[in-house]
Image 1 (tube, rainbow, N blue to C red):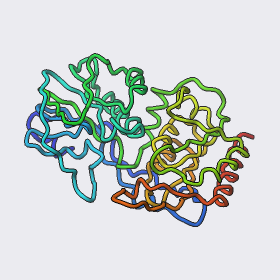
Image 2: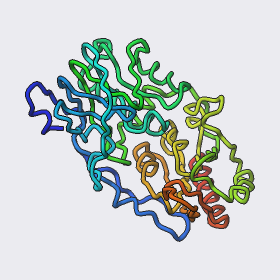
Image 3: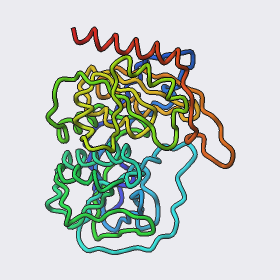
Image 4: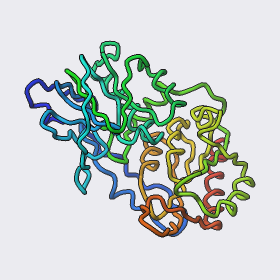
Length: 344
């Protein structure tokens, strides 16, 4: 955002200097390799921009200059090789005073993006000396009311919140926004460190073995073949939307197994040294949880399954998939052996 900062009235402050993400090779189970390295995008200088007359467009909180230009560095779309998204004409609601944004793309619909892309922006704001107590309005979004308490715990006053929503743009006299907190799909170590430090909970010893199920898209079609292997090795099924706080469960986990999806985001609360085994469909090979695990100092392994095409105009990323039970058993036994050895 250094180019934007050169404009009259704009102030840009670097909080986190540029870095190259950790590209340590993950542990592969089975014959199929995931090309994570090609998606390991460099992380630019990260910081906070303060400027007059910016407009925030919901539900993704896209940041527009008075000339209608998208400040891409604030967004998931920075560096996107296919170009920036089309921004529809949206009615603008004006508010007086200073508006501070901790909003991020997809945060109103997906817990993973809320936890990993939105909440860490508060760390950047704090690093720049921005006090929410001085803000007239705070622009944010939550995917479900049950996680609004995380904003409470981070000191975001409810009475000053403006929630991003479809069909509405917000314009204020003065706006404070942050960089996207990392590279697209690549998380730096300060992100899980911030979440553990500010949102960590009291927990018992890290001895639980968790399996995180998938209920909607990217389901594991042959989970009935895999469950006996999990039960045999002492795994419990943990529903992230259940009564127990996911932060507590993950902090007590020695190993977490699950299909690619937002349910794995809470590995950010695992203790360093815990093991993660991600089940990946070949129709959606993304390094979100590989880079998060590395940043959180976890042992990360993956097993790639076969995505099953469906009829009609359905994105490949939504395909359900199958996991080879033989390879799955090998992966579980190897992962359990690791955590058992570490506990001795």
